[in-house]
Structure formats: C-alpha cells, structure tokens
Amino acid sequence: MQDPGQGEAAEAGADDRDVHGALFSVGWTGGPMNPLLDQRSNSVKMTFMTSRRTDALSRERIVEATIQILDTAGESGLTLRAVTAHLATGRGAIYHHVTNKDELLAAAADGVISQVVAAAAGGDDPRGSIRALALGIFEAIDARPWVGVQLSREPFQPAVLQIWKAVGVSLSALGVGGTALADAGSALVNYVLGAAGQHAAGARRAPDGAARKEFLDGLAAEWARQDSDPLVQESAALLREHDDRAQFLAGVNIFLAGIFSSEAIAAVRRDASD
Amino acid sequence: MQDPGQGEAAEAGADDRDVHGALFSVGWTGGPMNPLLDQRSNSVKMTFMTSRRTDALSRERIVEATIQILDTAGESGLTLRAVTAHLATGRGAIYHHVTNKDELLAAAADGVISQVVAAAAGGDDPRGSIRALALGIFEAIDARPWVGVQLSREPFQPAVLQIWKAVGVSLSALGVGGTALADAGSALVNYVLGAAGQHAAGARRAPDGAARKEFLDGLAAEWARQDSDPLVQESAALLREHDDRAQFLAGVNIFLAGIFSSEAIAAVRRDASD
DNA sequence: ACCTGAACACCGTTCAAGT
DNA sequence: ACCTGAACACCGTTCAAGT
Image (tube, rainbow over all chains, first blue to last red; front, side, top):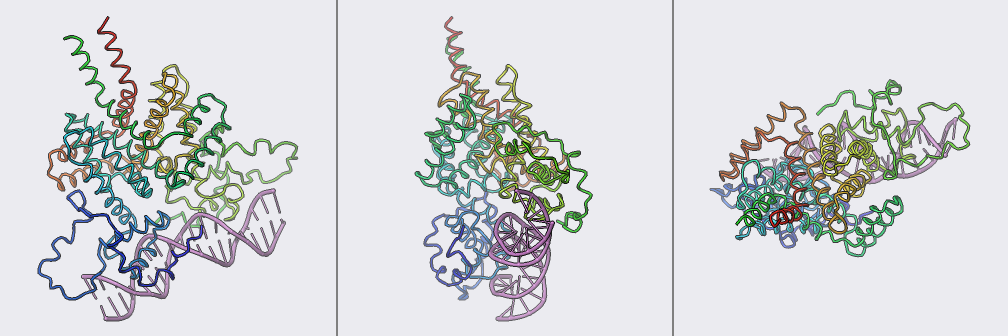
C-alpha cells in the first residue's frame, strides 16, 4: 500500500505548523485519573514569558499530533518519523517529553476516552449512564478504530482506568458493592473492551457502508460454503444483515440483566407472596 | 532487554532439527473450520516418495516452529528471522507456504484453540460446555499470553470462528435461536475475547505468582494515592486480593444469568401462580 | 534544558539466482 | 517447484553535538 504525501520529504515543509489546534478538537480535561497529562501544571509559576516560539514542543502538542496522524493515516501510519515531521522537529526531541511510542498511543487513547467519559457522566439514571458510556465508547471506536485496538491491548492504561471508574460509579449507585461490584465491573468492562477490539478490526477493514456490506456478504458466503451445518447456515444469513451497534447494545443489556437477575427474581417472588 | 541465544549466529547450528515434533505437543485436528491447515491433503496422490529430507519444509512444520518460538520468546520474539533460524532455512522459504507473518500468528492461535474447543465439546449440559470452553480459553491464555493478544486482534480469524461456532452450538442447544442467538453469542464471545486480551497483557507483565502479587500491590497503592474517592479506595483493596480466574468465571455466570433472566423470571411467575 | 539528526540495531518482505 | 540469502525499504531508540 503506497501512501503518497506521508513520506518524510513531503512533510518537511512548514505548512503543518499553523494548522495544529485548529483542526484538533479534542479538549484535554486532564483530571486526576489522567496522570499522563497533568504534569507541567505549575510550570507557569514565576517564569517570564520570554518570546520563545509560540508553538514550542510540549507533551500536549506531541499527543495532539499523534491523534491527528492516527486519525488520518491509521495505526500503521503512526511512526516516530511521521510525528517529528508533523511537528517539524528532530527525531530525538519527542523523547524529552514522552518515554516511548507505547506511552504516546496510551496518551492518545486517553484523550479520546476522557471526552467520552465526561459526556456520559452525571444523570440520575445509572443504568442509562452505563448504556451511554458503552455507546459512547462504541461510537468513538467506530470513528477511530485505533482507539479500539489500543484499549483492548493494555489493561492498566489511563483510558481503561477511566472506564473502570465510570462503570464502578454507576454500578455502585445501583447498590452493587464489594466483590459483586468487582465481578460485575470486570464483566462489563471486559465485554466493552472485547467488542471494542473486534469492532475496531472490522471498522478498519471495511470502513464505509458499501465496503462493509460487500465484506460481510463475502464472509457470509464463505461460511456457508465451508460448513453445511444448519446452524452455520443460519448464522451466515444473520451475519449478512446484522447491525453492529444494535448487537453491541443488546450485549450491554444482557450483562445488566445478568447483574440484576437475582434481584429481579427476588422482587418477583416478593410480589407473588404479597 | 538482552536475549542471549536468540541471535541469528547462535541459531545457525543444526541442533534444532531433531527436536521438532518431540517437544511440540499440539495435535492438529484440521477440521472444516480450519481452512488454513487442510490444503495439501491430496498432495500424496501418485507421487513417488523419492528420498527427500525427511524434515522437508511444510506449512505444519513452520506453524509448529512458530508456536515454539512464541512459547519460549513471547510475541516480541517472533521474527521471521527466528523462524528461519529455527528451521535452518533461508528467509524467503517461509513465503512459499505462508503469505505473511499475520497468517502465521493466526495459524498458531488456531492450533491452540482447536485443542481447547475439542476438549470442551460434547456433553449433555450446554451450560457446562460454555463454562468449560470459557475456562479452557482462559487457561490457554494464562499459559500462552500471545494467544490472548492474537484472539482479541482480529475478528474473522479461524480461531475466533471456531469459538463462535462452539458457543453457537451450546446456546442453540439451550433453545436460543435467531437474532437472540446472534446477540447472545456476540455478547459471550466479545466478553471472552475482551477478558482474553486484558488477562494476556497482565499475564505477560507479571507471569508468576510472586511477581503478580507485587505488581498488583504496587498498582493498588498507586490507585489509592491518586484518588481519594472511597470507591477507588475500596477497588484498590479488592484489586490486591482478587482472583482473575474466579472473576472471569463470575462474568460468564453473569452473562448466562442475563440470557436466561427473562425466562427465569417467567418461571418464578409460573411457580407462584400455581 | 531543550533540541538536532546521524547512527545503531533491528524489522518484514522481495527477488534474482541457484538446485 | 522449492529453496537460498543478499538486498530493499523501512522501523524505534540512542546519543554526541549543538544552542
């Protein structure tokens, strides 16, 4: 796959400079769950604002550039060379602000997830909050497949911790606590992250509606051809017309029902005995 | 991280030759769900067995070597150079049997999952089969973290299709069909794959019990330090002593309860009205 | 302190040349 | 047909040298 315009020579021009911050729309919240971003906070202190380049290199600018590159060129397009070209700086400069490429990816995913979590927070309906969070994550991944890949790769990265906490708050508000909360939270988070990874790979392979339709048709045909089992035949037919988003939300509902099933049954028993 | 003995020069000796097939214990089943392995099946036809090297290169031997390397050196240790050194052959030879490295990884994961699926199949208790399958996958990933990473990366690889089918058969035996089956199957498979990816990353980072304990303690302490929210404090305490396997199985049970919760409630209603 | 860019130690994949 | 191994076009990361 050739990728004209991504070469280093093509990026060496200075025309990328004035674009940053205009195209980039992710607002960095930085809260306490975001340890990768809340350093430097007191670096303004007593320093005179001697006229340095207004666009001096910083962790934020590097992460912004990373997200831009991931959005336009995909995960395979994210190279340290692309980042330095985008920022018109030298190779090693990045390593003064970030320890390695993995941290760059984790910080980029955290920036996206911060927004999703913030948007889904609040409200007086914890179940609704959980559904909103899950759907927000799904849609973020649909728009940026690289986020899904990154989320499903590393359990203790900031973005995943944010998701854990948001889920924990909602479940806690629903009266779940202790080990039950850990079990329920783990079930929901693992489901969401699993769907994230799988959907991301699908979205990357067949991004738009037409290509996706064609891809699913081809896959369904191959399934049907490979295995005459009626179950496989039926699954192939379902695959062709299934809606990823609806299926994802159905899964969230299954887990919510499972978490509260014993309660629901107890409630019915109570009603019946009255 | 230095890795003595993995260099090309060190591997150039022929002493790897007679080992293959003795150390390697994964039995290839090859069934119809395994399209990557069931070619060549009629290549024996009329050919005279002219005395070639008894260990001639083949797709199977390449995949065996791949699994051995992944098991001993991890995912980062799997390089085409390591594979060719292991097989004492030239770089390009691999490409006569396999199209690229991704296919190699997919085939290796499929080999491992084939065994797990076969071991969990059968029996007259579909719920038990689902639990056995899920636990088998968990344990395979615990022993070989690279399998978890690979499973959560690509939705339509042979190993994942095998899991889908096994789950579909069990759910179908439980009377779930149509869209409900697709929704339930997707929920369960995504949960298992999500847990797979997360657990794999954890297992890779802290493989044995002692390192794991230390890692979790450190992480819990960091959580507790970063956020004074009582919920986070409690989660940190739970994290320190949580059992990954028990939590994983609790998730499977939540899922099963979720699928049958409406049925269970209906049953209680029926009982109550009798 | 921050930045530069050449250099290092790797990769996956290809392909002319061999048998 | 199958295999070889040099060559190609990349990587992430380091580090002496600059400002």
